[in-house]
Image (cartoon, rainbow, N blue to C red; front, side, top):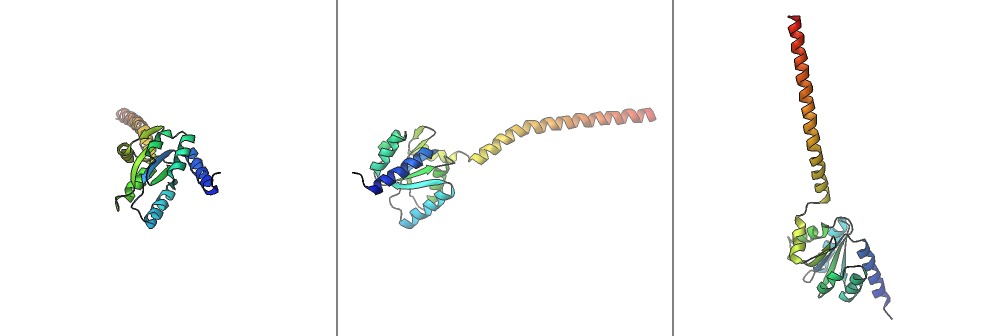
Length: 172
């Protein structure tokens, strides 16, 4: 019969994976407890759940939730950074954290239904944030409209100038 604490941990992993936008597997070996606590605090700010997991429980949960591709990477010390909102947030936080220390390293990631190896997962950090992308889209929509408005303003201004010139000619 499974132990109650393992059942509870498995339920926690399952609940997190069901809501996940992305999952990043990390190797946290070499980090102190204080550093892991600081890393978790940074993750929490971005609505990312960081779980230090037993690989057996993580394998079971991955298979149950459609993350089978991650199973081969569940070896050695493993932390799961599970993004609830911004799917790219975990990799940004990890790389900000790595400025001070070489750890944690990314083992693999599962993003938008695709398995990413370590190199590909690290490249994801170059994707702009959601807010930046939305601003770029809004700017792309606004540019033609502002050009159109500017063109209309010029036409109206030219028309007013022509009317003024006609009026001046008639008065003279």
